[in-house]
Image (cartoon, rainbow, N blue to C red; front, side):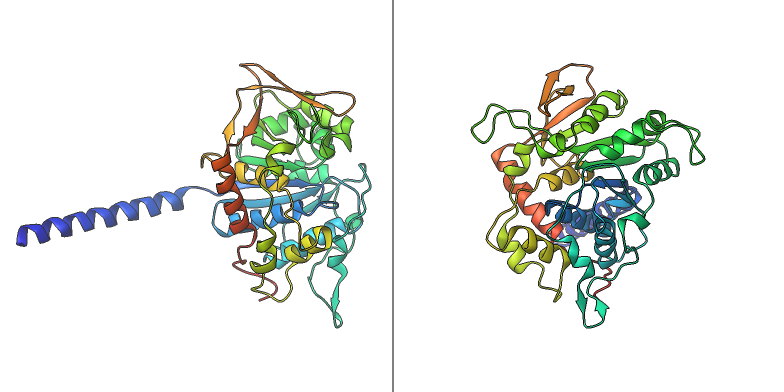
Length: 349
């Protein structure tokens, strides 16, 4: 009995030391620096994706360094500022394009909603015109980051990254756009394109491409060969729709929640919205967690009509997300949990 007790004690001590070592190892992993480039105007999946990033930052997995906006709407930057402030991070830099598609919105007006005489969702930016240019924010954020550290998540038009790739040396950095990206960025996670049959058609002209064909073509052609680009296409997001039950129940820890209210204004209470943008966030921050598989390396080509093709190439820069039925179940659940996770620090508390 005494020997058995000693053995049990030794095993327990070993387990504890192992857990301690795992804890120390987890603490030693630096959060992934992220730039979130979004067309947050039309669809509500951008809002869910932004909420996911804040949840992942609360968990120590990433650090949202900047948000850049790739469509033109005067309320886009104020809305992003309001969401960031809700999650306790109103200081995050926000940049906005001046030269892309103008887009109306069903939900950006939330940033102007009043409860009495006070903003329901406080923020400082009053107009997208008050935000610096997106390329300026991209260049500054990259130049101030460690080499080969930044992940860029592009979930919208490619206007900002295409313009970054054509940018020249300036007061922010002596490096031109491609060199700056090559030096500072380790991955670009993109939601764009459709690389197979869907909706009863042999191919589909996906919105992030067709609403800015020239920009997406420039991005695909000019991106550095040694910075990996992983594409989540239209069919991935369709397969992992956001459950309406989550909107009904999971955000009730506060009376007013910008994510829930944006979703309802856009899609209503009886729709499971595809999570296109969320999948690019999930892969970018948790690339090794087996939520997705990757295609063989290759090259993405964007034609003049906005259709996308993937050509296998062992030396290619691009890869596509792939996902099986069992993975889809996991993706739906983890995206729900992260999108609805209560903020660690919130302006509503």
